[in-house]
Image (cartoon, rainbow, N blue to C red; front, side, top):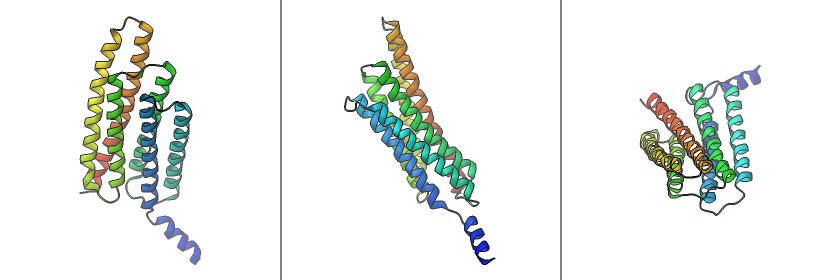
Length: 210
């Protein structure tokens, strides 16, 4: 009986460290995915498809690990729904970054200045999300500034995307125009996923730091 009771109370004990560790793993994978994309745009990475697929698998593994912990844990550091949504949002960033890289590789487009700036802004936003996650367990008061930084970077990215789409429409080759439009759409979607993660982090901060 004593062993059963001890196990029951272990089940009830919050396992905050495990969740924060998995969030950190996911965030690191998102940053590494962006680094591969950035190197590819700068012409320093050729094996982009294989590396992106490997990072996607890492992200999926971390996501499954977190969901498994949710099933095993009764008391969580904050709402289960928020943990689940935040993990999914980070995983979506990884997937969207992969899509950007694979579309560029598939279409064989030479990066232009709009694209280079968009990649830089995307990196700024993803790093801000990672900083927010690192502060989640110890310095939640620092999160609003980081999420604001992420959202401002994504807002600039979306503006560049609009300018880029206008330039793409003006191209003489309709096939090239369509390719660029798809690439800009992918970057917009990736930016949207970063915004979703930033919004969830902001909501969590408001709910649990009063």
